[in-house]
Structures are given as structure tokens and as C-alpha cells.
Image 1 (cartoon, rainbow, N blue to C red):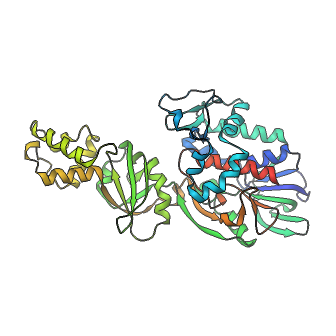
Image 2 (image 1 turned 90 degrees about the vertical axis):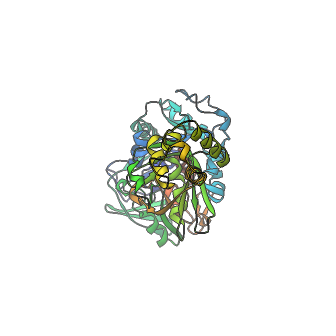
Image 3 (image 1 turned 60 degrees about the vertical axis):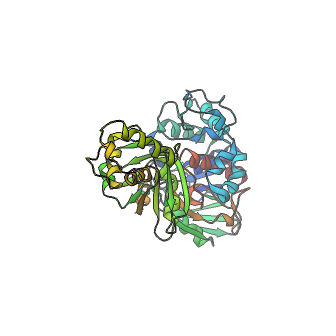
Length: 433
């Protein structure tokens, strides 16, 4: 192990996605780079993500798919590709604008090219998610570490950072092994999501001590708990295409997402639910989910269809919904609509039919919370973006201090967007230190 007191050009705090890419870029520029990681292995969250497959980016950020050497799902529509704008939109207006310079420094094409150059073929799935063709997150991390080693960056594991102090010639990073003087510091310590990965908010304390404002961290991309006992009975039921809306106490829609939904024993999850969970975590007052199980059909159309089906025979009402939703869900919707379970088609009243349509198009479920940071994929909140320059990711308060990754108040939707932000921001910071 090298002498801890040896002065470095750059010390990077955290060996996650953003930190490792910052290390690669800075080291390839000829700088002496040290990465400090408190875990016994780097990239733990990379290994866990995407069900251990690692969704590295989203093809909607591509201009073309020629760089992809693995299979492209025929369900993916290349017309959805809008370049950097697609990635930016996933982070909202403020976050998307902040990410612009990072994406110009390292685009989705650059991400795919990086991994392909390391011998890791990539593939595109129907929803635009880009995965390694091997479906192994271990291959993603191995590719990054190979490049990091070739670049000459030093990686020191089991090395938690105790503090960062300003110094006349830069900074001193305090570790259990002693102080490390450095010209620049990049904070890439993550947020508070999946604390088992070691992401326990360490970067926030460092940022605060150096004068930065921390937007209160909240769990995002996290499953939602609802007040409806019957939901647990549907655990395992998946709806591949529906609209989930978040509704406030006044009935106003404050967020919505059209994607897949999964019923679970605790409530609801799946891409649509995870995407709106940021709004839920930051919401005030009572909120509800409004579920639309038939996004392509208007209520009037469904009402007319049910009326016709009801007159054709003596099938139970739940059977009339068989072509609309899975059978287990149809039974539940009949109950929610307060229609007797043994009611048959011709006996279905006009009011009962309208209540069934309402259950199909606007089923309201009161929200009682989320599963918290333990099950959150990312953190919403962190170092205020107004205090960090987007062109360099350098602190506006402390020159020479840079922030990248989830430690920033920057979080996007599910689908590889957050990893793309991490790769891009890390690369930009490594270019500017």
C-alpha cells in the first residue's frame, strides 16, 4: 500500500458508478488519482442493480443503434430515440438542464462505446433499457475496473473517509490510515438508498461541514404502500401497460406515468409506481393513487362494451371483464365496485356498470407510505444543484471541490437514466479537475 501522506492531484470519495468514471477520466489525463471506498469491494450498487443485470443506460438517448452489437428487441421503436433530450426529460426541468453539460461530455453513445470497447456487447430491450448482452452486472463492473487499472488510478478499499478539510494548497482528506493531502476532491459517496451497499449519507455530512445546503433526502424509485387489504390478495399480478396517477387531497393530478404495475403483498411496485414514488415521498397532505387499467379506452367506450357483453348471456360479471384485466383482478374490481359477486350480465344495472367502469378507469387507493430507503433504488434530495456549477460540477462555495452522482439533488426515472447521469457526471468531473 502506498504512503497515505503522499500528495495526490485528485482524491475521489466513493467507488461507485460516478466515482469510478471520474477516476478513469482524470487518470487518463495523466493526473495522480486515488479512489477511497469504505466497502471491501467497489461498485456494490452496480452489482445489485437491474436484478444483478445492470441497466447501464436507455436507448431513447441514442441517435442511432449502430453501436449496439447485441440483440435489439423487435418491440423497441427506434423512433423513440431523441438523443440527450430523452435523458434530460427523465430528470425534470431543473435536473435535466443541470445534466446538459455532463451529457455533452459523455453521451449515451459514449457509454455504449465504452463498454463495447472493453469487449462487453450490449443489447436493447423493448422498453429501451440497455443491458450487457451477458445479462451480468459483474461483467459491467469488471469492464470498468479494467479500464480504471489501465488508466493508473489507485483504488483503496476498506477506507472510510472521516472528514475533508480545506488547506492552503487544496484539501486534506482524513482517513483511518492518516491524512491524505490533495489538490482536488470529488465527492461521489452516493445517497441513502440501499444502505446495505454502504450508501448511508456520508457525503451529506462532508458537504454540510464545507458550507453546502442539503435538500432533505427522501426515498425515490421505491415501492408504495396503500390502504386496501384486497391488494395483498393480488400479489404477483402484473399489468404490463397502464397509467398510474398521484392525486392530491383536492383531486388534482400531481404526477402520472404509463408503464407496467405489479401487485405485491405490501402494496404496489413496478416501473409506473416507482417513477411516481418521488412525488409521493415529497408530497404533503394525503395523497392517493388513481389507477387506469384501460389507458387506450375511454370510459364511454368501456361502458358501451360492458352493456353489449352483459346482454349476450348469463356470465358472471367478473367474466365480462376477462378481456380487460386478469381474472384475479376482475374479481377484486367487482368487489370494489360494490357489485354482488353472483350477479350475471343481464342483471347488471346501469349504476353498477358505471361503477365497474370507474374501477377500471379511476380506481383510487389511499397512500400510506413507501418502503423507505431500504428498498429505494435512488435518493431524491442531496447537495443543492444551485451550489454546484453544471459545466464543471465544481462547488460554487469551495473551489476545487466537485460533486457527482447520487450525492447531488438529482434523480431520474427508472430505465437506466440514473446510471447514465452517473457515468456522464463522473466523466465531466474527471475532465475538469
